[in-house]
Length: 439
Image (tube, rainbow, N blue to C red; front, side):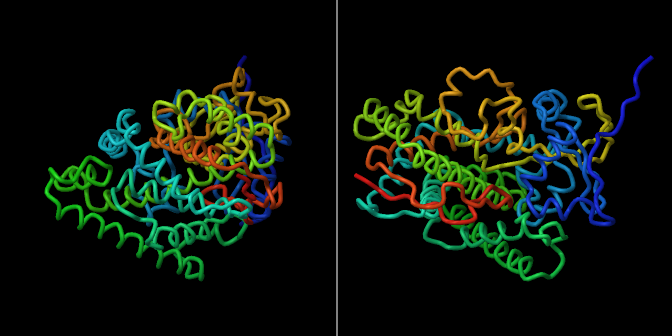
């Protein structure tokens, strides 16, 4: 006789709002308690929407890889990001997503990425040239400026760092989806001050993108180059991409392409500032591998630096959770998840789960030298067919920028070693992370 398969267990919420209050109070603690109290597949409720946390590597692999066709991005994501990037690569699904992925892919081929490294290095060099011995640096501010500049130079062939529209739009998006604020769970059509600013700054960002496209179209095709902006403009001119798809993809890459990399750099520097021995070992590696300036050929040899980045992304994943929606009834870890259920796949919880990680709160890069953790116990860039298309770009940029910094400065932390964190569209520091430089 087969045993009856049941809906995943979970806490009873309040009438109407469900578990929303607990979520907004501390989203990280909520999911950790959900895992510890109800298991690694567990249910909860947000304003009457049935939701399910999936925090077991086997189940995550099914959702992202093995049975990925049974799960789509879902209404939670598409509704919230419809205005900003609803027709872009991050949100779309099916044939539309596949076509866009194929169109964009050439900008991220390995040989093209290698050609970006000199610009990444030049940007990082300009950053450290502004630094001085003894200076106190706000890490996230500096890394955000650096990655924005590098993104503009490499993927778009323009200087976007001097125009405040992208950073202002990023700030507005962060405020709109800050989960510590109860109203972030409310529809964006409500005319709150946060929603009005979000709409205004998004309009400005979209107008900026339209102007970039106009300028590029004025150039003859043979003079445009082969960066991402030129590739997308060409597809619009050929009728293979609508103007809305172009705009939403540009917003996607402008926002996601610098924000997550800047955060990855910020948290890696934060970890290294707290661990001077590891920092010294990395400085020695950079000195041994790089002949004065890091090159694309050097990057694979910086193995210890790669492990440090991996470990920082484990502890502080910039994308701290994914959303999916079940397109049919599915069984996960012995539970039935009904069609239409919103699934949350939380990197934060899985990356810090003692079931897969020894001493999970500790910064120990050596664990990645011979780690035997399950594959989907670590997935900072997602997994399966929809893994982040910019993963290699981001990793190369992080190694290039960090190698350049380490070649010039040692540094120590002068801010709170355990900063408050904001769970919004990405995992942001809620207060400045500051280092003091030492030549």
